[in-house]
Length: 155
Image 1: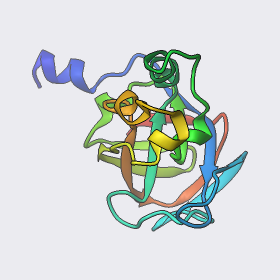
Image 2: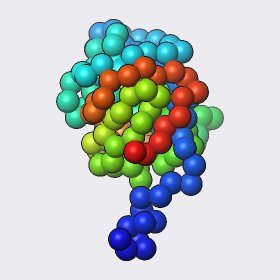
Image 3: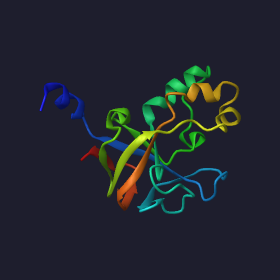
Image 4: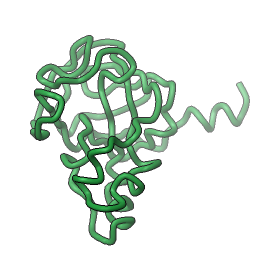
C-alpha cells in the first residue's frame, strides 16, 4: 500500500457517540435517548429510511460553526434531526468505509443534505448554514445496540 493510502485510512483516535435521537414519524419532534437498537432498517423506534440512509450521523464539532454562521452559539443536536451525534473522529474521512458504532456496524454511504426544515428550525439562512455540515448517511451492515458514550471506530 502507498503512504497516501495509509494516511487516508488511519484515524488519530476513536470517536464517541455523544447523543442519540429518534423521530417516531416523519415530522415529529426528535426525542433524545440514552440507548437504542439499530436493526437492519435503521434505529428501532425511528421512522428512518432503509438502505443507504438507514442511519444519519452528525459531527458534533460542526454544531459550533453552524451556530457561528447564524450569529449565535452552537446549535442543539435535536434541531438538526440526525440520529447519532459523533465526536472525536472525522466522519468525512470515513466516507465509503465501514465503522463500528457501539455494537452495530455501519457503512458511511455519503453526505446527508440539510432538509428544507432548517430554515424554520434555525431561522433565515439556516439551510445555507447547514450546507457542507449536514452530516452523513449510513447503511446497516450488522445490527446492534448503541449507547451514549460508545466508541465509534473504523473497521
